[in-house]
Image (cartoon, rainbow, N blue to C red; front, side, top):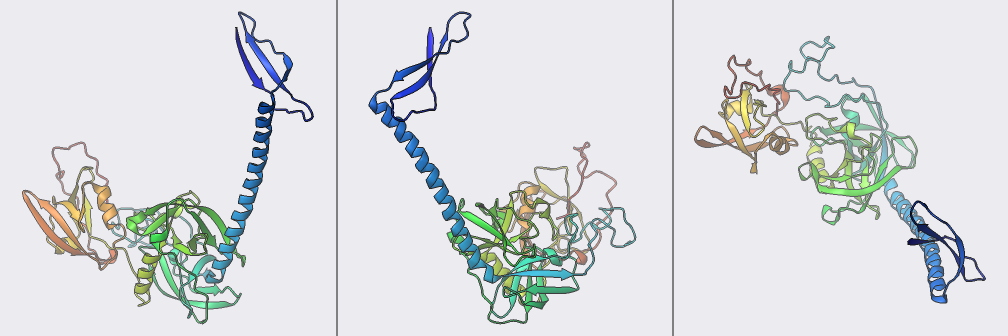
Length: 418
């Protein structure tokens, strides 16, 4: 006979009885339930009472913690709000993805018509705003995401924290890191604090703020810092939900300091690449040090564009990066690269497959000089190439009649253009 006792969750004050259910299994008899009044010794009753009191205290403590957390978050938002602005844009043309630039009337995508092009990188339809910006200097510099400036708007207006609406000029934008710098005619603006990246820790609470809904109070989503050093070391990653409302706004800590500038990011080309991940729980924010370096360049008024080598690699070789076709003119052709060369190192980083190659050059801007190490036959060569803008590249040669690798007749290449 097996007997199992289960305590009933009921205690009777003024007595010392607790109910038990006795279950007996014997042969074909499934169970026999009998409620008994069992006298419980004082220590057992005291332990049960203490357990109930602890549960009550835990519930009260959780409620207190939630209230305290709310107070801390509200204080952080209040500290940040005077340093945020709402940005509205009007006009500009919607960029069209995959359309032959030589034949603007063509509606059907022609992906190979222009192999090197700075496209938005997403089919996301661009709105006029509003979006969010962060005051960078007291004399009117505002840093934000380039999300709302891809279509080159005709009018940009900024609503300052005190409610004033002023016109803004687009100083410059970084199409690689998705950052834009604006200037308004104002002074004495509040500049929020930025947290040094060295003080940011994985797991700490992170708040994403945005003014894109039109309210004077920022919208807030909360999460944690889920990773550091993402996107070639330029970003922190967060699971706080990000959307176009937050882009250009801050990712902040509970002290009211900015951890990073929220932007859509991805390793493929395109100023909107990565926007399709919004509200997915994977978001990125440029670190304070990176934003500082970007703004220093944008203050000169020069835009930053993605850099191109002007090559097509053999996609049939997943274990190596081998040049297939080289544009003429292009940095690689000027450097003396040849078809069949294998790239084994970029900027000091070992390259073992195409993914490594993409990571090494994903955020490299035009004008940047990059050292390469290549293998040609039995010889190892060192080249230095200066990346250029897409429009500075010539056409690729026609596809060769003979396959590049006769030992791999089943390869079906879909070349990539770094």
